Image (cartoon, rainbow, N blue to C red; front, side, top):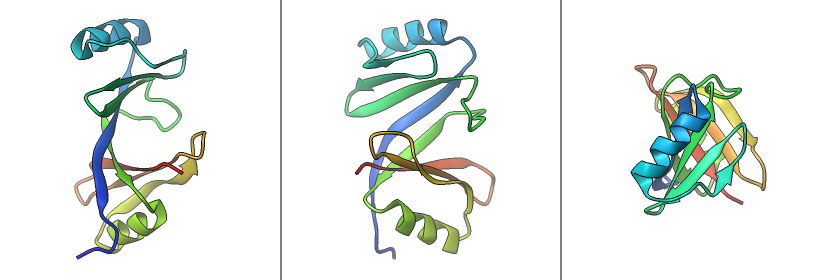
Amino acid sequence: MTSSSTQGIKTVLHPVSDLAKAKAVYAALLGVEPQADSSYYVGFEAGGQHIGLVPGGGPQGMTSPVAYWHVADIEAKLAEVTAAGATVKESAHDVGGGRLVATFTDPDGNVLGLLQDS
């Protein structure tokens, strides 16, 4: 059906209201300390997945968790999902280190993410 498949969901970002309290809960849940720990983002690597905590939903205004499918070609996948009826919410952009992310909504308004590492 499509020319570019995903590599699966490997990243899930969670908006949090209290970063310190959330960090303690997720560290207990995952059984590991965060690998990235700053005032604007805390990230954990556990079981082959990246779990991120974003205070206040970050600049993108997240209001619920967003699952990110990892892809080899983010622009191609965005074109495929929009041709199928999705709506781009946040165009592909670099978030550092050559990592590109984008979000889109499905026909019911659910926010989904794409992530491409360079």
